[in-house]
Length: 293
Ligand code: PAF
Image (tube, rainbow, N blue to C red; front, side):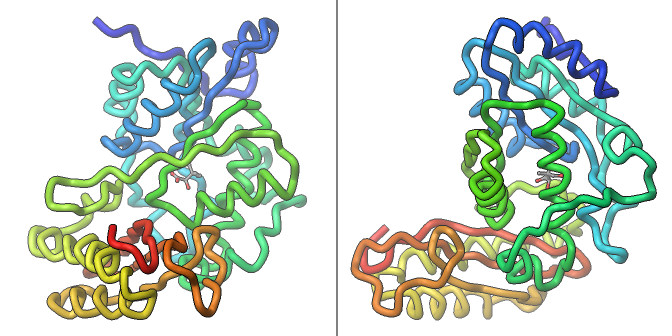
């Protein structure tokens, strides 16, 4: 039988569980999550487990209210704590930190007075339809970094803009945490794993595959440049009626603009967001411009 991870609900319990590792100078790894764990999270845990060989891997499970807009799915966000613990045990997590909201935001619903200004990247792409989202993400990630004090933290590439912004925060604020990106995990038909996939009905689930199909089409046509890649992805998306496209863009890997005439071999990222019914899905893939994938 797999021994389960140790549970901490409070800051004190967490620092008690990590005291030994700190005193003996062992590494600490962190996988921040909002629970509802699936194979995508499991793969992030495996990355952390592989990288942190001599110290504890902490998984945080906290549905962060600050990153949800007023009309978003905070109340119906899936909560599957017992099943989450099983995945954590199976993947060799040592500590699960599952705080109550007041533990993270003392005085809640009062919000922290000192916050993080995520800069211009937070108001484009996801940030355009979700104002305040990345500010909420960066506040909680900064808090988790302060509470866990990890050497290394693993974030999924699925939320690519989040990953770029967390890296940016760590660099700009000299937080000294190594941020590792974990590859997106997919269903056999290509749909990126997401806790929100469970909101899709049968027909939407069938249609959702068009997103990853469009990104793959972009990868194929990137040999002819970024515009051709976008054209191929758009053509693929047009084959579906149920998909309400929000954005489809090709950007530099740091989500900045591409050079106007990128030389062959330039690395880029294609990103898509769309709604199926009321469920918003995002996905992204790497591209190499001017070269076959
Ligand atoms: O990616 C997520 O699950 C969340 O945005 C994170 C990083 C755990 C912060 O709440």
